[in-house]
Length: 473
Ligand code: NBP
Image (cartoon, rainbow, N blue to C red; front, side):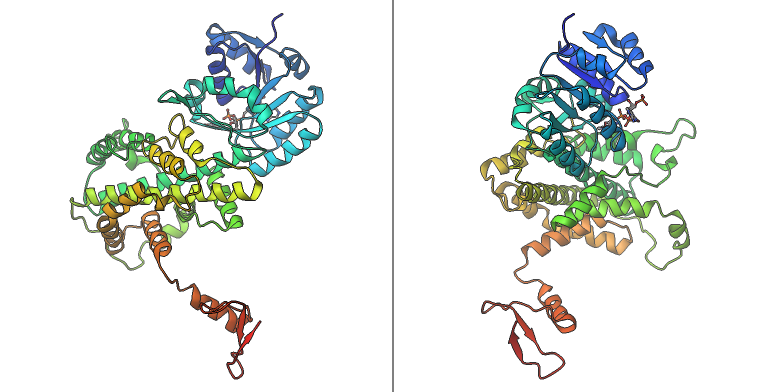
């Protein structure tokens, strides 16, 4: 019997859709799932879409594959991934490839890759974005692992990925955990982007008095310009939707408590380790946490502050500009985090290539990623996206609006942690001197932590409790 080109194990929604996508592109796909019923269902419902080889045991699955074997694992991240990878590795041979397409922690991917490398088996941690629709019709794919493994996997993955201007949304990100790391930051940026969109909606509804239906039109209009993106597009859809049961705007019947699965939190935890200020992502994660503190929120309802006053519809254009500027800050911070990790782990990640493969298939796909790609193409060592001359023009154009939006939010009592922190980051970055000098003085005062001087080298300590003379430390 003809051997399969590739196998997929883990046939829940993501795995089955990836398997179908591969089969629709002419690949022969071996199928496996812990519970055989899923495998059978896939073949019964979609067997006519291409060449599938259903199997029951791991041994049968592995035997059905052409050498070197290529297997995509799409199971629940964490222990299930370890269990499945170990089961596969036990029957695989040197040169075979195990691809984890789940949402693994990149440190787990590094550990698994190192362990399997010792046994001669390639382990590829592969970020997949685009949800179930993307998996079926073309996701954005972020594979890590060795260049050798990518040479064997790349053609298949690029064939099933989304395409923008004829360029596949898939590239080899870098060794070991680089792919899952970039997927993690992608999700972090997705948090920040959604938070900024939510703040735009809130401000325009509360402080400019627009209804959800009117706001759906605003977002639809924004989606025809530089903000054009999947998230802006679906914001218009969600805001325009009316709840069939009550006739009220859908957004008003949804409990205002945002969930999270953890990738945003991971992004922030890692940024803290790396010392990269991803304030936009952090504010988005904390805003979701705060939304979930129902008891505290209910108890705090009578705290003093302005009652939201409806006002000025001219705010719409200001919010659009502030959203664009804040969004650039959030993306710039995410790309800084990628650069820092790339440096630390020796991944050599090409940020222009990352921007290129995020242009389609994934949740943060946006026209504006073309600008980011151009920025890093022009200067691969760009210290911050904010410094790209084309993107910097956005800040010139947004100045007055951005500040007006943050000031209006503060005056009217509409919380905008995303907008406010983006502007604070921008202002901090451009300051010649920061109050960190005072912080250093305080640290030296209470803890003799020493400080550096602006006029000569070395470390110094002032004898604060004695004669206040300065000594070289
Ligand atoms: P789930 O994350 O719900 O996982 C279900 C699959 O894992 C089933 O095939 C199940 O087998 C298998 N599984 C479990 Br649970 N424990 C197992 C074990 N100990 N041994 C073997 N198999 C086990 O599926 P999903 O939503 O399709 O997501 C798959 C992966 O893709 C996840 O890591 C997810 O984070 C990631 N991802 C999801 C999305 C999305 O939009 N859903 C997007 C991108 C990435 P069973 O049928 O026998 O129970």
